[in-house]
Amino acid sequence: MRYLKAIYAAIRLQRLGGKISGEHKIQAVLPDSNQLIVQLPKSPDTLVPGVQSLFWNSREGHAIVKPLGSDSESVSFELVKAFRNLPKKGDSVWLSGWLGESPKDFGFEATEEKLSNGTIALTSRKNSSTWVIHVHGRNATMAETYRNFKQFSDLGFNQLFLAHETDAKPYGLGKKRSFLGANEWRQVELAAQHALDQGASEIVLFGWSLGAMFVGQFLLNSKLANAVTGFVLDSPLIDYPSTLRLQATLAGLDEDFGNYVSWLLTKSKLLRALGYGYEKLPSILFHVDIPGLVLFSRTDGYVSMERIDELSAANANLSLLEFANGKHCRLYNQDPAMYQKAVSDFLRSL
Image 1 (tube, helix red, strand yellow):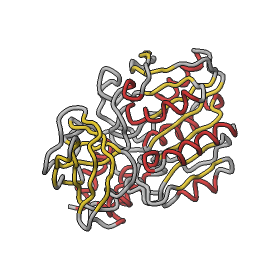
Image 2: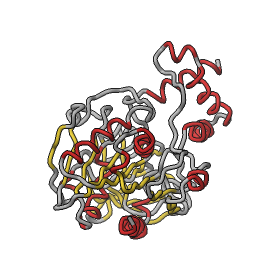
Image 3: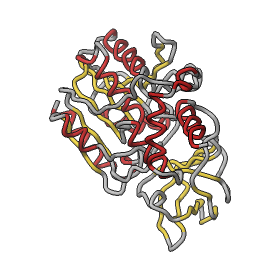
């Protein structure tokens, strides 16, 4: 039974799509003068400060919320903006760092440009020879990265927001198989080639979560890596064994189950016969000479940061900025000033 459960977990890791379930049940939705108050159960996740997104019903529901305070059992949020239907009591929801859905939500116009693999990237151009390529994470979309737009625009950079082949059409190709970063780095390579074809002399890569794995594997494998002058990683997926151990404990299983799934991914003949096996799991634990900035929290809660110090030790040109008590891809929301200062200072140092 343990073997079958681990095989299922290994396949599920690589299958995208399907319903996304929320971690919290809305306790109440209360009118308060001209606004709505949403109450969620009190937990380390709901106590994260800053304006955030509230999602439900596999992202069919989406609202922007701002924490107001807490009592012994609940955290109250002001509903700042609802993009579609309003949330209701009992909805299963989760908090995320997204702050909008379209470029217009962030005050910018974007141009659609087709890459050679058929995906459609969004670009915003300044009179610059430096391009910033934004790479979103697993089961997300380009919208996850839009909150960075204004900062890079104010600094005068051209920007490209990369759709993955697994994103929904029309921007992505609607594919449902994740290769865990083992070959998706080629999508970053196509974006880099597109920027170079448009006159880029320098490229900065910005990867979020699994997108950071794509960036890392690009730097390790691509012939275009020498065009990159710097990279920024937000809440990066560092390697699979440590994160699978974390996910196993979150699911109420022992850490060894995570190790077992990792082992099966590279050793199971059944997985290979089904097309899900790997010679070696991808990782970003290697040395690169390119300067980098990593924004992270040891309380990430989704990907493991147990090897973050190994990542730093291997790369003398890597700067780490830890956000105390932060959560996955919600570091910007927690302290925008600290976040943006670190990014701007890093870019000026290149």
